[in-house]
Image 1 (cartoon, rainbow, N blue to C red):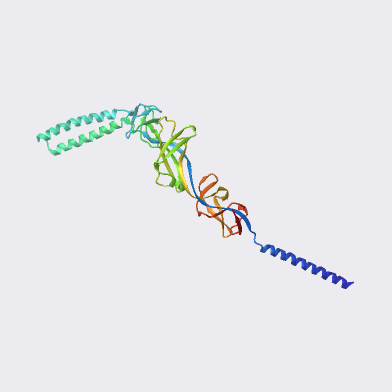
Image 2 (tube, rainbow, N blue to C red):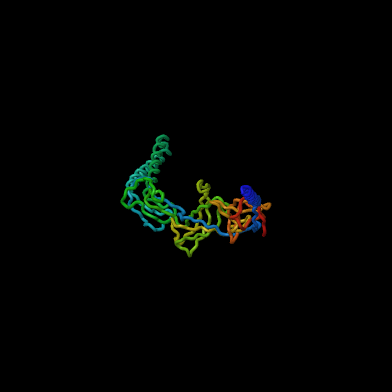
Length: 347
């Protein structure tokens, strides 16, 4: 009986060892097998796209000025109201004339003295020193009179539209610079803007800067007049980039004869006919990880991840950077791939 039990136990042990060995061998065999995916690929190829670039911008006046005087005084008369158009050289503001009258009297008196000593010097009846003394006083009085006159009748420095009265008639003017909510200087008596032509300013990232040229004709569209478009020309590419955004401001000058465009308006600037050349891949082949984009490449029967940047998109294809022509781009099973994985490719 005891011998039978030992014999039975030995048989069970042998069976267990055999079963364990078989399972271990199966697991080892599975672990040594290399997983191979069959994927479809397409060759990257040279492409040329012609499309439009669109930027968000803001409308600014071509010129603006706060018209005032360099001398203090009382505002007697403002000849134009907000919204009125004025020509360059027109008298916009009349200041009190007391100082001008006094300086004019002084100037005309010294002018007579100067004429008199000029005649005396010609006859030899006065010394050169006395003549120079009278001449200096006369020239100083003349300069003072012209300065006061210029600050009594204030004229428009350019054609434009009166935007607002900063001061009212009867108030005493004193130059005191300050800023409004738009960070514009508010010192002055009236604000003048030239709104025909206008400037539309937008920002361009440094990656697209090579596509922007001075003199390019562009189309301007606004939300206020969605059915109308305005033509403009790139007049200035500012010389420095913003270090934080890596972008540069660009100015477009546009005519505004109907005065539909207003400073402060939102506008879209469309640069048409931009040609992009480079290596193109299907949009479906591009994967995103965080803020970066990648494609999977097939090379020597293995899969490799390649970082890229989109340059332009047209239809189902994108021109991208950092990719060679004829590179084999993996189109399928991208989520199952790992870098360096063995693959079988098919077109």
